[in-house]
Image (cartoon, rainbow, N blue to C red; front, side, top):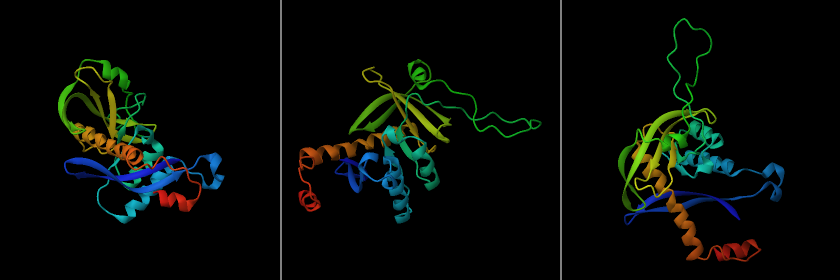
Length: 225
């Protein structure tokens, strides 16, 4: 089974914990009628649209890099829900358009010059700044580069953060947020909270046995859970 799970992250006894509250079963095109098929992104967007009708509180979605694309970003932009996620390293980003001269006619440019590749930015030695963040229960020192850029493929403007381990033991990480008011430290710490839902999945399997059911009837499934 392949599930789409939404959880709210809370602080319990000094630790970040994900509490699942929305669970939907993803079915492949082969396993359901054509008119009933929905991608994981479509399931997530539909759930968030419903949740937005429940509450008016600010919502920030923390998701894995697979959800960071136009199919997710554009609906979230309409819902005014920012997304913090991992950014693909081959994303082609562009700067703001240059100021337009008064005498020039035609449509105003939406994007500016192409920026360099993220991997190349991560390899250069200039522009890095040290920051201290609290992630995974520890205070960690990182080197970061941060800038705002347009992602034409998704049609949104992002705050991009490239992180690097000062000791060189880990590969660079590329993060982004559609909330341009977030600081780089906030983006890093918010994304780290996403790991709490992976911990929930692990505990549910190892401690609660939710991956060991061999049942075929709906009643048996409910009894096991």
